[in-house]
Image (cartoon, rainbow, N blue to C red; front, side, top):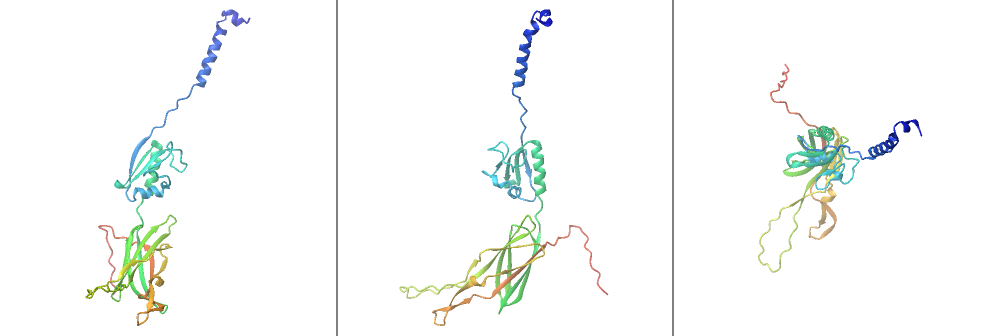
Length: 284
């Protein structure tokens, strides 16, 4: 027997297994890490709609019932902002309702504020050309100022007593380009109605031209560039008729052929209230 065992009557040797057992239990005990704390917040937006910011941040691909779910909700989305669990756009009061860790909410709030900027304002300079014998002739001009993206704009020209209407829808892309969706109003002649044989005294009919809008066409432009839109005269053609009223082989164009030229420029900024505006000195 060892000296240690003899001196203590075997008590030390009996205590060793107990110490080893306690150490193993402590080492194998599950660690209870502190669960992260989550909080709800509302982020009020100033310029953009919450759904616009929501889409611009790439969150709309996970939309379910009006909101997205991130970490810990139906799996982890690698594209979802870190530290966030829920993001809900609420356009009614221009807020984003979010839930996440304090650090995640603070970082996401800074991202949202950086995206919530005033929309650009443009000036549209439009010139209408009438084409006769393949020769364009400028017949009218119009300017729209303080135009913002994603709002329907209307241009109206009066040419020889007749109105020509156009609709424009401008969209700003992330690369700085501008998409112009364009439509023009077509006036179609009234179709004659065949008289009823049983009606011996038909009432005089008053026919008015029907107005329909052309199919939308889109061009991509940038500030300062000029784009020319064709009114597509072929869509305004109908079968011609001989003087006897029989169908002819040719076609007749309803009205003249037009081209619309558009240039998008930065909007003219209005002077600030109370600002001094210099008056040019007349030349002597």
